[in-house]
Image (spheres, rainbow, N blue to C red):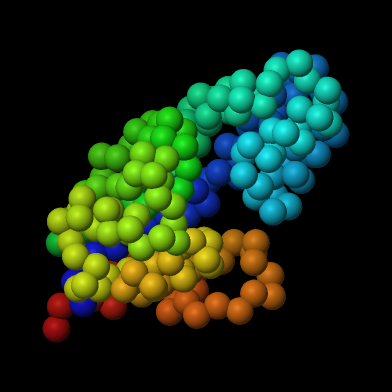
Length: 219
């Protein structure tokens, strides 16, 4: 199996929960909401991680806001790249993999402006060989075509195997495995009671990087 790894972005490489909390606090201040309204926003987001169009439909109705759903969503996408940060050890870990001869990429669902902004603002775009964003490519995980695009940008072939690291059991793990990759599930406690067929389960991306590196030690 080739030294090749693809990573999901949100909640795998970047701390979206903390960024969302910061956004919610700013949003509440801007709209003169109450402290308990921040908790409501966070609860709505964490419940089922709804699509943002659905999320902002509920937010607009709940607070009787004048802005349209499109305006609210666009404002969120514009601000979020400035709030996200990588989890500890992510940037250095990805760099170490590439120094060791790995080809490393990112494959993510999401709107082009939001996801590309996150990749560039965090520095992730500079430490990987390539990436594929669903909003750019017009195809979403778990469709194997998005994994194929990312692999090609990294100069790798799915036919030669590799790894997919992510927190979503369907989009990342099942999708990656269907594309020919071994799956490492980052279990953040958001899939309680779900059966899975991940090859490995880890607590964070740094642990996944260490696992892959140790698995591919030269003989």
